[in-house]
Image (cartoon, rainbow, N blue to C red; front, side, top):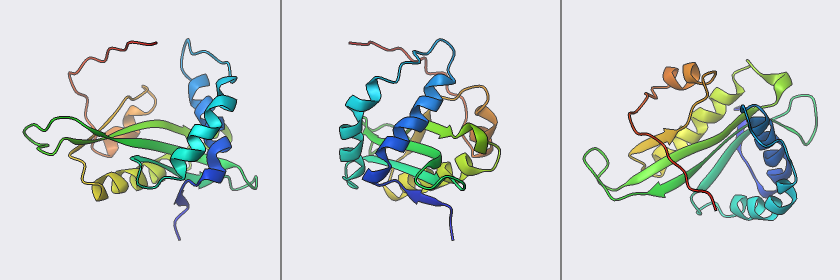
Length: 156
């Protein structure tokens, strides 16, 4: 029996807690958690829509009932096709987080493997992600490679 399962609406608060763990680990990140109350309804709705292009895979915390030990989330995106991906379906991975007391147990890898399989079932031609230096070995061991594409962002 697999430790990994697809997240359900009842997991929304724990997804947000683990997302905050991820945010807190980034240099210069805003540590405020005020956004979580406003985000909770949206996350529950996305988790309730299995065909909506969003999936999160989780491992339950082995010592705390109702808590999550690890999380990986991703979305399906469409871009105009190109060589190697003529249908333009792309998977995007984000929010890879493990409860600090449960790291180095393979939970993130197990969740990533489940998400990659979901992307395959959805017919994506490529999977993109942004990797922290600490996560590069995990992703590289799964076949991810660096690309020359520079990322830019506009915030509103």
